[in-house]
Image 1: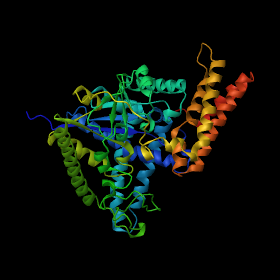
Image 2 (image 1 turned 120 degrees about the vertical axis):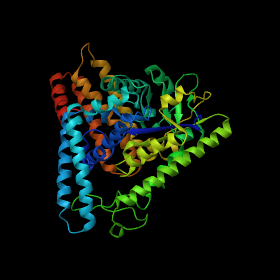
Image 3 (image 1 turned 90 degrees about the vertical axis):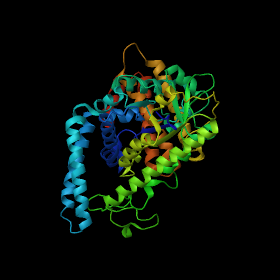
Length: 491
């Protein structure tokens, strides 16, 4: 048997921006529904198909605990079911339009909505994400990555808060999926020197970093100092072939355009056509043309990976490792044809002599290099911390320090032997106040006012609960905690 030219790992990170109570932002709830129906469910369906065909160690999948809780929650699942039913009704209405391309689109959307409803009713409504994903984890089809309980840039967390957030996140995954993940996708791929000690203490064996943290040398996992914890770097040269800040396959002319709507129906009827073509001039989306583009771009990606692995083998004298990392939402939500491209790539790479495996499988295959000292890093703009610590968000940084101080002092002063629902709610509000999404949205001026309002609201709730407890008003604290629990929902 010919040895593989090298090893390829696909890492997907599934994360809900604008965490918890997604309906607060005008399009937040719509985003959640579209991401589930267009991306998450379709990607898991693809993995089911690959599992049935005998594939194992297909990819590594990170799921943030907040999103896992939402997709296990009966209320959230019922809302998804209602949305899918309305999706089917909208498709039926679209079929009555006079434009031929809209009638064709109606058939596509009706079929997709019908399949989604059947899947929801057969599997999701009875068990949620845990019941759908755990068989794939147990069978070794997917390696699961965990993470902290809330999506917070860890560099800005006090050590006790960071440790508690990570422990809660790993415990949550253990409850939902049967075991705590051995690897994590840290929020924003953020790293600060010393985090490896936190990871080692929590039982984490490996984590993902972006390429610049390793000065571009991502051909093997590397122990961080003497911690024994491995960092695995995203290969930007390969990853950017699919999606980069400026280009990538999804921008090709024949793919479905994400930004152009038929506003009467809410559907996206156009193809990209061209980068500078205005919406009204875009051509109708044609599935056959898009399918041809999928085949073309999948073949190109396989060639890119093979060439990269051959170059690494020539350089190092041994088979190399390529790790490509993306947000799961790219595949289906942002890029409608993304799941089809994934299916083509994950079957074509092994046929081309490339070992496809998980991060765990890559380590077990010996893709481990010498120890490395990492500097500060993230996968945000500049590959440093500026998105979360820059001048535009200094007020959020200062407020976050106050939230953490109040959280720790209140827990220390009022924690008893039994579980306390008031302190539970205090922790929850603090973690939401500290979410990294708020700084990201402010720095990028993307619904910045909403982000500041959300951060301020959760910060105020932390101080209000703490004030009541410190004043000895236990009844008032219980009443407020109960009200906040209802406001934010059960997940």
